Length: 241
Image 1: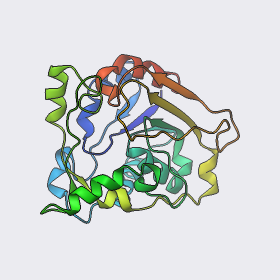
Image 2: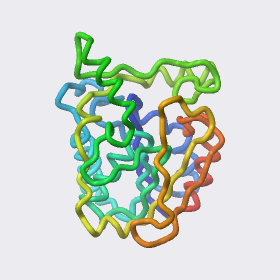
Image 3: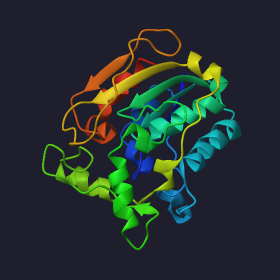
Image 4: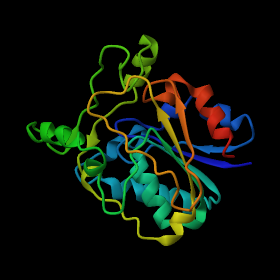
């Protein structure tokens, strides 16, 4: 059986995987869905010093502390940067990288480089009384909704797990200088319904860094597919385990 490590994106916490975890676990897989520093049970640690490096350290400590190996590392949205950096530091522990509607950085890039629209969020925060923190995105009319979630009950549930995102997370660059990380297989899962204006997805190169053909799957749903299509997402993840 496989070990799945599910990493939430900006503003969310580990609870967002609540509908996926039992589906993976019911097949006998080990599943971890931690909250990163500043979110969920670690919300009290939110501060201006929390950045991308903090979240990478979170996962490195978890993987090494629990002696995890052959990890299928799934990063949603902003966490594409996080899992890329984790793989750079612990390539021998990672079996597969899954970019789930995620930012896919190059060496030395920050979230602002990957998604320039995030600079607007930083600029707005700079005009507030707490310039180091960015509030969650607002709910938009369907089909955009709240991070692609439109069902009223699901929107209400999602709101309970959202909190502010530190600016430093979007400004710190990734370091992708370990050649061993290039051997790790990758899968990209794109949520293709209700993409907000200004969000541009980089084309996935036809050949992965390890020389294999690119593996790209699509889900006909909004950004938070772990909430809107947990069964369909799980079926895709099963193919990797």
